[in-house]
Length: 226
Ligand SMILES: O=P(O)(O)O[C@@H]1[C@H](O)[C@H](OP(=O)(O)O)[C@@H](O)[C@H](O)[C@H]1O
Ligand SMILES: [Zn+2]
Ligand SMILES: [Zn+2]
Image 1 (cartoon, rainbow, N blue to C red):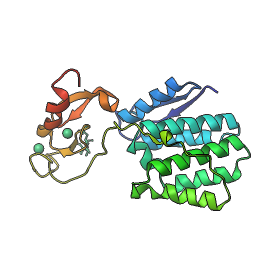
Image 2: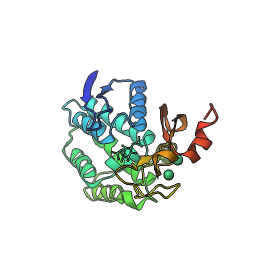
Image 3: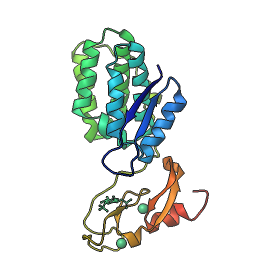
């Protein structure tokens, strides 16, 4: 089962090629979550690598990749939710349920889509998941009992970055010289002089020093036990 999937970093030069090792142990999967949360691996690339395993002819490999997907959805937050809770991905899962001859694979997919629909029940932007549950029901699939505890997702993941044409703190307009920068702790957009500090953000699973704004520096950077 030990498969190495080399996932090439995207076009940003400092994103080194990250190796996604699909090993049959949770430690490796948790480590993969950290890579995704830390921004070492683009969620899109991680998922496209994982999807290859979803279509593996060996149902055990398919099942394991569904378990990896389940842990990524629990631990990597909106970075992964935004890629999975989409029509194309949901349609792929729908097709897998229709085409798979393996009962375990089918019921794992039904279980996951149902739990995600419940977890996203108050998030209109992910309503495609509930739509997919409805379609799968209409197709005659019977869903396993929902375990609400499965719908608990790790709360602490770094926020998405907002865009803007001026610094969130000093309101200076960005230009060719006054470049845009993002604070990894609040996701807001700043000029360099308002976000010149770097710190680790353990609560978001970010172990390397990353750029934070002055406000977040006061909050997370000052104390060494942030
Ligand atoms: O310098 P640029 O070519 O504009 O690119 C900017 C840098 O990549 C910034 O990285 P940083 O936050 O680590 O500085 C990023 O936050 C901005 O969104 C990008 O626009
Ligand atoms: Zn500023
Ligand atoms: Zn900030």
